[in-house]
Image (cartoon, rainbow, N blue to C red; front, side, top):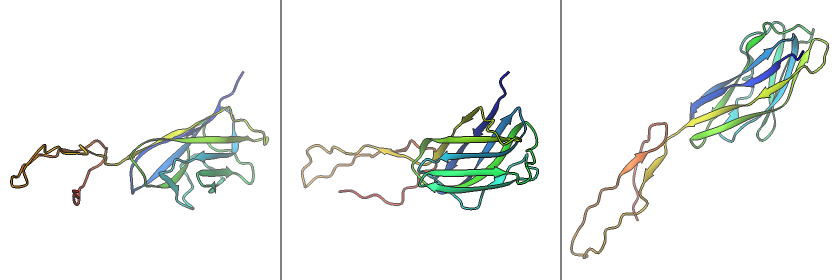
Length: 178
């Protein structure tokens, strides 16, 4: 028989310039009292220090998260008296982030996942990364307007079509022509 004990990183969609929350879930067939993993953060995500908290299933555990390198966030949750987490499926930890970056899709990787069984052994069977969708405007227009041959004594008018291919409201404050 093979027991399944998995760590799942959630997926989030947020606007650039906003704060968002990422949840980590654990599906387990065995009782566990601790968990540790590293999240590989995409460049638009910045961890908000001290925001690690339980999303549920905790009984007598504590959680912390700390950046260990530029884009590597280490998360640790454990029980000092070896109390098991409640349940067998669902959200466990939530983390807050500032989102600042170019619109698009990014992966949130996970590595070095450990689920600590009640006997202290690593019972993790798998870990699954998540994703980030940054909603941002994306201006689209022609980079040139061809007026053709026009006398310096005449005038000619052309229309410039401006569009938004992004997933947030595009606001144009001013235009500069050369």
